[in-house]
Length: 258
Ligand code: SF4
Ligand code: SF4
Image 1: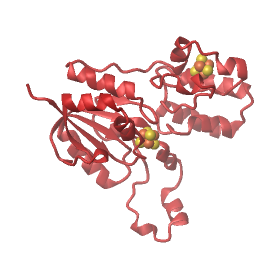
Image 2: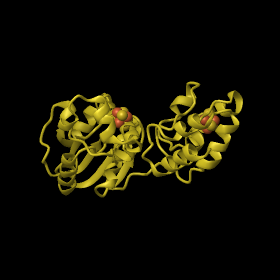
Image 3: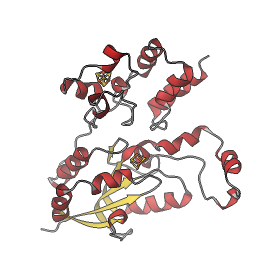
């Protein structure tokens, strides 16, 4: 029986999600025995145009060339998975979508004309059909292994869209918002990280994007009750996942609300 073929592609990103894959350690060696990796530039394997069973994509779309590359990748893959905040919502670089890109390029660079960039940084799903999204900055290693394992067994991976609070409670953490008045975004943020920040005493800052049925207005009201002022409130939503619809709309509402 032939092995499943995999390609890992990168667009605009910091490489952190690919590093999460590389840092898998022993499971990566086991994975390498189960699949044929055709393209993974971070690991030194190069064949960008290979036709594969599973394409994994990190990074957001920022240039016209990116769009052409992405179309080709979609054409060459049976199953396409986008990984990380950059690929699922446009990432931290999508903050520029709320500014005048041409203007800030002119303000910052001596020769902005040589910069080839679209005005917006967008998610992979804005351009091609995506079969599964793994959110987070960076992605969680457990999630990617589970997704690949499911695909190798021939079943669809589970889409985890519960809230961080659920995971936090399962770990029996004492709630930071209730006991310490920390502005924790857990009630509206997608699970998957293992409630990493609350487990070490830090409030969640929403890097896994919006959870299913996230009540962002109630969250904003609660944060306001904790003393956050308008700009701080808006920035809780307009941060790593400012391009995710639910967070974006709430952040803009807060910014416009005098
Ligand atoms: S989602 Fe975060 S860790 Fe992953 S590539 Fe983007 S910026 Fe880096
Ligand atoms: S600490 Fe944060 S994630 Fe944990 S239960 Fe409280 S609000 Fe939810």
